[in-house]
Image (cartoon, rainbow, N blue to C red; front, side, top):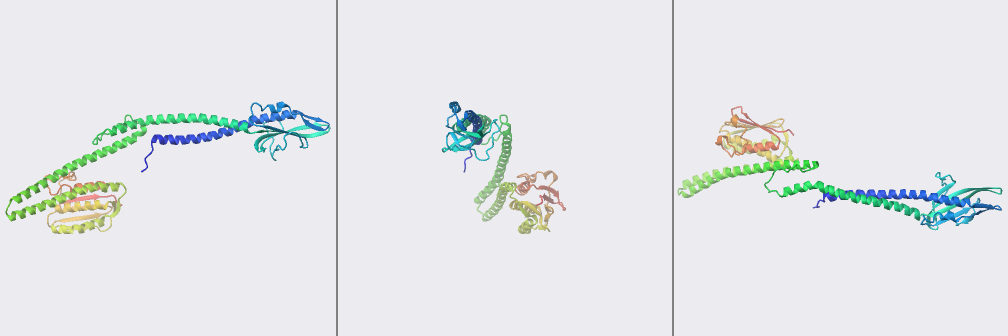
Length: 461
């Protein structure tokens, strides 16, 4: 299985990724902003050089000449890491000074509006290097010469790139320091926020296995409060479950100890006797006791199965069942037992009645109700198994019934009426647990012939 990562490291990793993306975006933005600023600054210098060269144009005997002063190119001496090229063309675009083949402005290059001059700025390549070029038009108006001379000044882009990179590096350095500070701050903040959970974990680990007290809430942040309350609620239910389990084990052991001891004593008495008739009587009594113990053990196992069935229902494992069909099948299975006891077992279920439930538990419920009714109905009596819409089950018998003051207690485990009733005291307790698992309501009423009527109302499917 994949080991879950640390919350602290996951948060730092996600934050680091976000900061890296922001740094990259900011670095690119700083580079292009720096390049734009460098172009603005160096374009102004290029234009100044072109103007200086234009100021040195002279006309002698109808020929235009260029006197390029040293100061025109010396402007770049202290702030440029690249090379400078220039070219001067007369009004007929003939080279009169400078470098040959310096590229001119591409068609459609607009005139700059940033400076009051007939200048155009553009990027080009010269001698295999990218250059930034300014083309300045200088009006020539002489008696024998009239037109526009062109001065081109180009500079390689090393200085501009260096300036943009410097601005980008400075931005990344500042953002990197800020990111490291933010990660350290988040590390200490998360560590401080998780410290109460660490104390909570230590408190849980130091507890004994049987210590199910609620966890303290006083030192836990507000966001962790619902988690701790949920754990406390689960612990409370778990403690209740353990208490019921312990009580059940104690009651079950008591209920099993007494008949087992009586069975053992009866067998020991039979072994001391020498009369075969006594032996047979002892074996018959032991067989009856064994039947009762088997019935008790089966009911104890039924209680254990109810918990699994209830969990299956809670997790969405309930099935759509026809209660009439379940009652019909159970009635046919119990008919031989009813006949052996001389009791008439009748079924009233004319139409399908649908509900959602766990079939094993519902069969257990029907079996316990019918078996309990048969056990308390005298020979010649009647037991009616009735199913009606929307989802109501009734089992009515001709037995002695249950007094009103005892009807609330008969669903308790191992409770016997006045401690003299037959059975193990688990039948109706099992029925009550199954009803709770199905969210059904169970109630006891007087029968039409002074017997008992048990009514179970399910939620219709």
